[in-house]
Image (cartoon, one colour):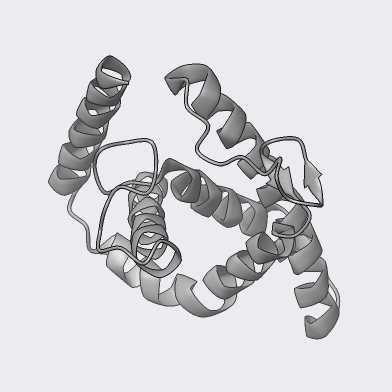
Length: 164
């Protein structure tokens, strides 16, 4: 349940960030789905948790170098997540959610060297600052709410596929 709830919480946070800070609008859909879920942030959040648990936490070195190394690892892995999610979004829904071909340092449509550092910074903020607070929220979510969120997400995906 922890990872499912983490997916929903990170997706919701991504939705809030994308729809308020980056688009300067108030809670309008920021992803492919109609509801308040931005899938790439959910996938990215789960990826951060797994990379931390299975890679970062196993690195034995001083704290400063570990943070630097974490930044590099997170940047590379989350850039791959952005690439894969962008490709799958196009493949499944027939929509390009982002397209960096107009950027000077693009690597195809879905990744751009101008932005990859943001993913590493995002991951550091999540793992070193937000995770303890978010874990408290995640652990308080009842199973029934998680099942409801899953059903709502499935419904949103079905409606999105039918309407797009």
